[in-house]
View 1 (cartoon, rainbow, N blue to C red):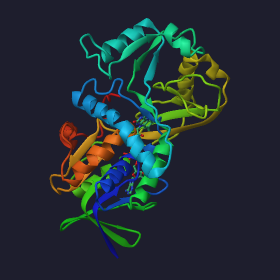
View 2 (view 1 turned 135 degrees about the horizontal axis):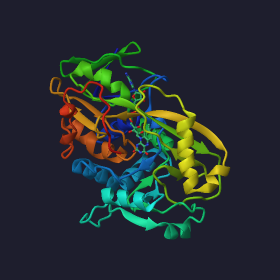
View 3 (view 1 turned 180 degrees about the vertical axis):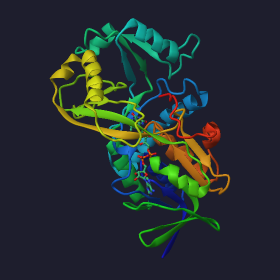
Length: 376
Ligand SMILES: Cc1cc2nc3c(=O)[nH]c(=O)nc-3n(C[C@H](O)[C@H](O)[C@H](O)COP(=O)(O)OP(=O)(O)OC[C@H]3O[C@@H](n4cnc5c(N)ncnc54)[C@H](O)[C@@H]3O)c2cc1C
């Protein structure tokens, strides 16, 4: 049996699902093939922030891409709610990053809001602790203040993925789950894969298989410098209101649980959890909100980021096999709207969106597994 589509997306995480949904909305016939239970899935273990603070300090192109993504989020959230009927807990009332000393505050403000930086919607401001305490009386005595950006926000990341999957089904996208693609065959007029006894063909291909994209890329001439970076997180039992805005390492979900995270560890494909790392996260959180020390810990987990050596995304069309694309980013929540509303239509027309050509796969030269300094 052969099924033929306009776009074949390998990987049904946040990136593959967002692009597939955007492509279906643009009128394409789309199929998504998503891996087996044992696959690595950054999309089910993340922190759920929509974040611009500190994004693109060394890359104006990334700063602008992130800002454009965050501007699109309200429209994307409305479209997704209408298409899925799911409330993903989208909020965009600003986000905080707590600092515990004057030196920490000065260093961060010098990086994020140097003299002369524009005072626009994305400007990062410093809010002293006494102001923060007017709405967050539980703030600990050690807190010096927080940096704040009004465009930052958060969603429930699991509901975001679920909403995308429901939206895909409601848009007529074929989704084959529990199916690993082992090999991609460039063929006349497109690409073919075999899964579960059937052949799937499409004119265009998007590799959005997260950490799985590196191996698959080779079959379509894409050399992808991707490596895993472990993040450990934990979540508490429900409690009364503690903080009313998401912060970079602490957020309170709508139902009252407190989520704490996350480490950045280059330890390969190791998803284990370490008490010292979790303790370090908890200790800083308790300095910020001492009441956290009284809460029961319900769950801790780790998840692997899909990282590149400079921390920026990769958007690349294969030169050898035009029509085959790869997309990967370690801010797949923040970028979900722009992946659906801008990346998807561009891929259908055979291009990468303007402004992100800088994120080509070949910028890493002869990358040999080096896990360089990444910007977050
Ligand atoms: C600890 C942590 C915290 C994070 N916090 C944030 C945050 O606050 N905000 C933010 O914007 N981003 C955050 N991220 C990043 C975000 O989660 C990722 O950018 C995003 O999930 C990447 O999605 P993806 O679709 O590329 O990859 P994945 O979610 O890994 O999906 C890849 C999919 O491809 C499938 N697959 C793999 N190989 C194959 C194959 N051979 N055949 C078929 N299918 C295959 C897998 O089954 C999987 O479903 C965080 C990540 C981590 C780990």
